[in-house]
Image 1 (cartoon, rainbow, N blue to C red):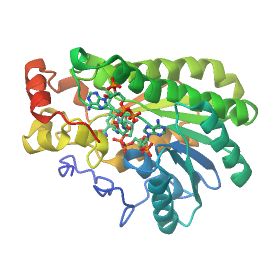
Image 2 (image 1 turned 45 degrees about the vertical axis):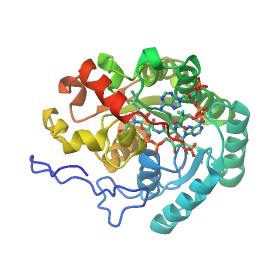
Image 3 (image 1 turned 135 degrees about the horizontal axis):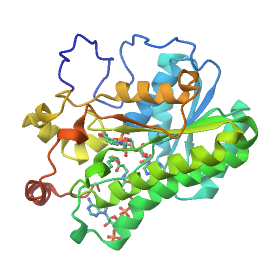
Image 4 (image 1 turned 90 degrees about the vertical axis):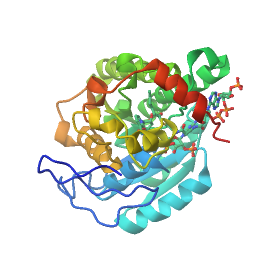
Length: 301
Ligand code: HXC
Ligand code: NAP
């Protein structure tokens, strides 16, 4: 878990598992998203789950949508229990526009409105470019980049075009300096950052704001585990970050809440870097990363 802060700030509560918070102190007004509806891709785990929880604790109903329906149902039950708001779990694959369209239709049928889209679904693993198969690169681009476009376009055409809305894309800072072993995910997220600005320009006149949050290492997540976070933390690697710690999921949810709410009503096309200053100072040591990869390489199945 994240180290205690030094600046006299109180860190927001978090838990390191895919469970809801045991206590929560509001920073924003508890009714900031009252009676709005948010559609969160990949909302059944990690950062997406915490975004769903924090939104629901601010009066929002949510749809959490990804491939594993059992996981989503379990998450939805937990989320509703802690917040008293409705959470609809829906099965879809962001690579398949038809499945997104069906999920958005169901959302509109159940809730009658849609205010916020969070493009959080992603896939990643450590792999050097030379060992990456063509299909592996394509798979990550299809989930992260095409998935973000697919969901945005479906939601825009079915609702936002005529009603306005807010899109927040969950990005990353690893592409900023060409992080080793990350050409697939870094290329995908860099494309998403460009997409954020392009869609902000085209859809602003329809009342749609499009922004992004770019997290750094966030503890208690699948991404953290896959990118060597626990090992790095044990070795003191985060001491070299300006804020000298990993971030937590609630911190990412607060950034997302800011961009998805009227707190940021004049902000569009922005990428909110939320990485503790990580990309400015953390090492990108190819020899070290290659050694790490060959000792740790595993498939997730
Ligand atoms: C190298 C790998 C690999 C690995 C899979 N592949 N895992 N290559 N190293 N560890 C290859 C496979 O061999 C295959 O290529 C291709 O990728 C597709 O693999 P599938 O298993 O068929 O794909 P699929 O079932 O669609 O699963 C997608 C996945 C999987 C991305 C591979 O890991 C997944 O579902 N992940 C979702 C959860 C996740 O990754 N969360 C962390 C997000 S963190 P071949 O050639 O053999 O057919 C994050 C941080 C962002 O995103 C930082 C940005 C810079
Ligand atoms: P995570 O828990 O694995 O979240 C990814 C989610 O995406 C999962 O819930 C997964 O659910 C869903 N998903 C994957 N492929 C999908 C597909 N084809 N269609 C629909 N849903 C799909 O990982 P996380 O670490 O919290 O990552 C969340 C976001 O933060 C990602 O965008 C990631 O790139 C970003 N990020 C994370 C970190 C970090 O340190 N964790 C750092 C930078 C950026 P299913 O398996 O049910 O489909």
